[in-house]
Length: 171
Image (tube, rainbow, N blue to C red; front, side, top):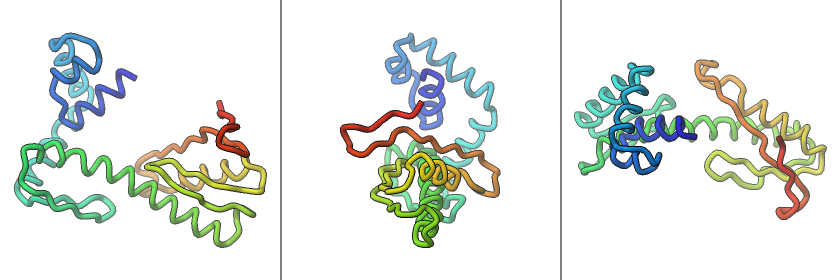
């Protein structure tokens, strides 16, 4: 969990002081941890600088999938500039998977199953079929051919059940 916190906090431009509070470590330790992160991922620091410079110059950013965001001049512009491509890539990958799932649902590939809702990167379906088989097929579809398999993408199945209060966690 600490590694995840360091990675996301550093990529999103969190200052060492805030990171030290989140990790319950000294500010000096937070600085060292961020240094180790960028020591392991040198290209990460370069990418952050490139994105920030490009957004400062153009005041916009286009994602891998072509989504465009125009930025307003603000004190948080550099943080937003780095946050946007990361957050939107995850969102776009999920949306492309959902489009493929929807097409297969319409063809009846998952039997008597319907998509109920999505929340961020979570998908809720209702089925009269064997739930684990349906969820496995949906998981496989979500993981299929993302950006020509350039980025490995893993979907998880968390739980299933007949009622909200009776959901069973999948280990």
